[in-house]
Length: 383
Image 1 (cartoon, rainbow, N blue to C red):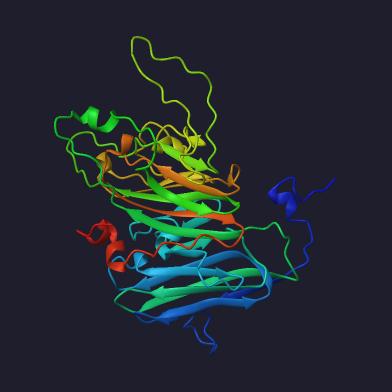
Image 2: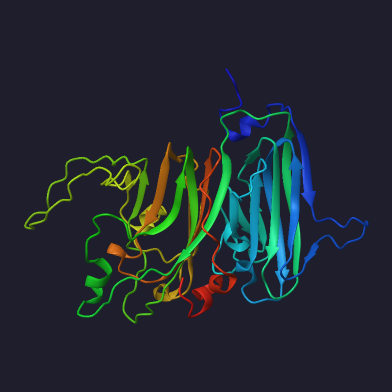
């Protein structure tokens, strides 16, 4: 009987055929200036290696005098000589909390540690077969001070079936709908969504792989004095053009309703079969919480880093890791969520999706311009 797979702690005893190495910002003179000084507009390579290996841990902390600088510093990673990055995201969003803020929280693969969440940690394994490169770009107005470690194992070779780590930032300010003539309850809970086309897209990828989670941030633009829950939107994940499973459901007593009939893809490769391969029941449900949460909470696989304050008028950030339940795709995947039920809300939404897949990956859309990425997406800027 093998011991390694019985539990994470049991696996620690297994001897390994690899070499441990580290890139860091230590002072090469032997002094105490253990940091990089990155000028505005400058891109610096923080790790680069030819050969096979696995990045096992990244730690970083940053300082900069620019407003909202955590949205202006961009982390990128490249595997096996690729020209398009497999990781491209503002560094603050990658390590946990959006809105260019910091706050202590602890999940299994990503943590932000004291003081005040400014110690960033990521433990997602990141394998590479022939080489790797990580860069940091300073798009802020002032000098960036960066302390960091990139810990890794060097190997003679890797198994053929290891996917490459990917992380992509997205943001949007969806159109929503007018509230004229609707009560608050009708606006928040009414309407139907029969195709998911107007949902916010967290991830759209092609190839073979598995989606492993998201950091998801919302800033309400409604600012209603009435009860203003932002999160009634259902999660809908479309995989390989295949519809989801259903059990027979009785129609509500006393109501005349028409169920949506199952349907296949509108065209080969459209990946829009109904019902979605995975169809959820609400934003807080997808993030494994319940009943319109107002409390901060951290757990290994899900959490509420910032709950939104009174009536959800402050920024919200949540996370959901599919570590025990990865969402597997063989050809293509679209991970989406409604922005309010039936896509009626027009809030500022941003996210970082995390997944593994075989290369090549679908090239990312251009990262939004730095002015549009600051909280409020450039104040009055449209996403």
